[in-house]
Length: 288
Image 1 (tube, rainbow, N blue to C red):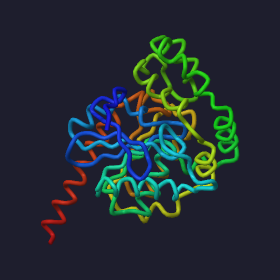
Image 2: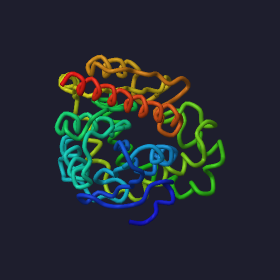
Image 3: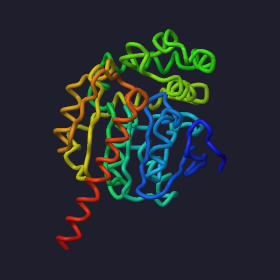
């Protein structure tokens, strides 16, 4: 393993072919990025999480330094691949944090591999609004044109400038370009130059609607949503939470990239789930 300088507190490694970054001890927290994202998206959370937990940031097939996905792969395939990596790392009952596309992968991970998931934190997850015809067309266009790859080379020189952050991220990704730090900006733009293929993941996302199956997930869950998310409607947050039987938190003046815009809210969500899991375990021990 080598030090991941862009992810403080974590070091680079591989498991089941996937590139990942891991560090810390204790309760496992697995971080699953969104479509077109990478482990570097979690740059503002890697150190605070690894200080208190065993943090693991995966890179899904086709993204970052991970290999190509199977042609025609569905979301369950992406979840199975993530599960293989987690089993190689001897992870059990993790708090899985999934953002956007990664949220949908996290849902499929909880459905297909419940022993690996002890808590579910979904940050603006795909799976409802992402299945509409308009959403599928937008995803198809962006994964084909790869706009992130065009602007990524300028991230080191221009990420500290508000005009650059506004040009790249507003209004589709963030609510307030001033509130998005230059470190977070570089984290979001580090992945695209490495991606091998995001189109397969994008098509899989557009085909997958997990709503009828969410009631099968029994672990504690929390849904986080930016109040000004321009990509996915806020109504989806309440439907996810209702079907999961979990909680929902709406983050004021926040867009789709809450993991970079409001990392404090994500960190608080992880800590909240950790408490819920401990309480549930204590009740179970008392009951037995």
